[in-house]
Length: 432
Image (cartoon, rainbow, N blue to C red):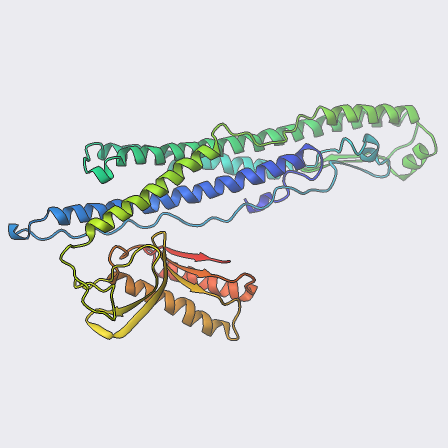
């Protein structure tokens, strides 16, 4: 998609279509991210829930080993850059060597200048997304998973099968939106192609008639964004001196008719409501938080006591018990309380956050090593001692806007390096 910048043109209906396309793509990209986050978080929540219920059902006197929590699946989510803005172009889809035909057609009817090669690329990409096996198999797999949970009767999670089918519907919605965007790009390309073909034919007819009155040097070509038409400097001078006035006037009238009938779209129409899809996914994310709270409550052992007044959140089970909204939680190593592993700045939406106000640093590599790499590594070490957050996401959040570009790039690289080093960890990065 990087090669599709300025594909929609900068004149006529294409400019309006570009605004609609960019908005639709931005919304669609955000919905994909939301869906993928749900697909990452939901199985991890179910994994934790299954472990908690199995542990609760286990009888220590049975002689059988206590259940062990299975490993969480690898994260599926990878952030995706927004496609480039689609508006832009040469300013007119018709260029000549001095007749100023586009100007004569009128400012009220600019000649569209969309790039058909780029529009074709965009249509191909969106169509490929809509039909890629990995995408089309997703709803099938979600339906298969949902069927496995139909017999679950635990009241807190009895609706798992329904939830998975709702995620499935959201995935199907997005596949339909991909196809709709592809169709709109393809239709826009076809409209441009047809218009340029008609302009070419009309200009060729004009040239044949004109050379009966004026000597011309014809140059006529159709490119991705424009039709270029030239008749030579002598012919242009003759027309400006009054030659072939009626012929030129008839040409301008015919060209106006072709541009007016081009049939370019002004909006990207989709058959599925992105608002409905967003509502489905938001409900799933809310439900995930509810299940997390329920599981966390179930996981707390009633026999756990909190006997250390200096560390009121450290239980006798060797775990720190934190709640949503907690701030400045110091994590000392259980069994070696003289060693502080780290301090958690905030617990929000199930994420353990480290917060920074810096926007630059005198020695950027040194600052990043200490406050990004080593700090987040300490969070990953501390997680094993935080009840219910052993595999939860961690995040680095900058609270002040205006970060220096070089500083920002260094931070982002360090976080990417940590993600590569710890592929099973979910690491967030937020800028003010």
